[in-house]
Image (cartoon, rainbow, N blue to C red; front, side, top):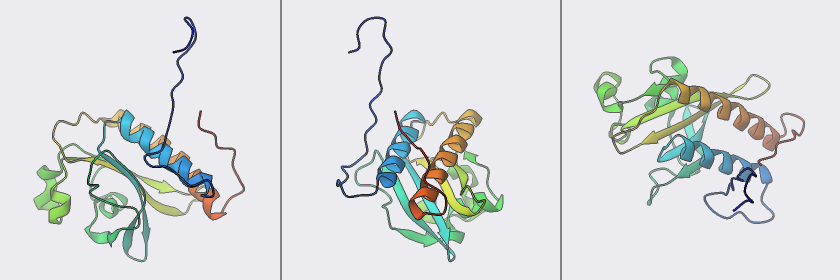
Length: 177
């Protein structure tokens, strides 16, 4: 506990331990996703990369065991909410996936979602990387448009980290406090 009259400090930690030799950017992205997941009360948050007609789960933070998705997994992009979001066929915030499932012809896996929120991830040079998305399987999510704005800010931070990791931009001073 901090001494009386002094601010509280928030400790941020990753969902799983990282080896000392792993790239710190991967750890920072993991911590960012955990903060997003916890602050928006989501069960799963992930960064999906769209490439070659597929959506790849590059970074995942989940509160569920077993995890419904895993890093490295992929699906045809066309079957994903991510691609529909990028195409403008679905909004950034879907309070009830089930209400639009039939019209969107979602796969059974997507129909299992209760709510979904997502935004595009554009790298600093303007290239589309993919999406930052989150979802809940359980009912009762209270997401709103303010949460979309929060997710956009997180997507921008994630994009800078991703660009740093692949060397497409000069190293950025990114610190999590």
